[in-house]
Amino acid sequence: MLIYVHGFNSSPASTKARQLGARLESIGRRSEFSCPALPDRPTEAIAVLERELHGRTLDAITLVGSSLGGYYSTWLAEKYGVRAVLLNPAINPHEGLQAYLGPQKNLYTGESYVLTRTHLDEMAALTVPRPTKLSRYYLMVTTGDEVLDYREAVAKYKGAKQLVVEGSDHGFADFERYLDSVLSFAGVS
Image 1: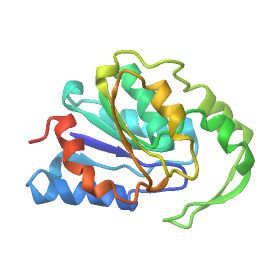
Image 2: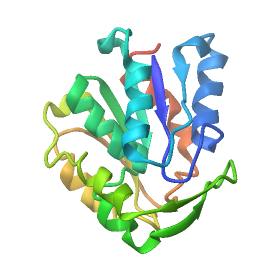
Image 3: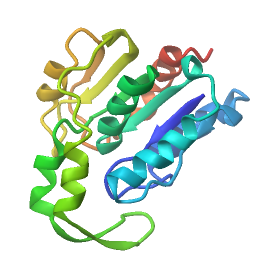
């Protein structure tokens, strides 16, 4: 089972989520894919994701988290012992998003909300200082990420499987080229 965890102001309609779902569909495994719509509040987003995990065989689950979704996926991987593929993951979103406090609009749904200090405090509470059991992680970063410094992620997940793609961008425009490596890590043949 692959659960795609979208990022800040994103949704299940994100390009990477659709590409991963389509790839699984092409091999007859679409039923093993989920991408829940996450609320803007971190505690609510985590609750949605924990419901996705509930009742499933945890060692058969791989989270695929992008940006803020990578941050959430790390916290869930540590709590539940599931595998996680991290795509340009946020390392300290409670710090990086301070400049965005105030009105926000979801890029896909158009839904408006206000990003508050409470959001950032909830994110800070999910901090994993140093991941354990690095074999459960696959870090995929792009050197051209215009939002996050990929070197912070490389350092934080040192010892985990890593793919550093030269160029590209925060959205990981060439993610589709690496889908089979994601599936391989997840144990999907």
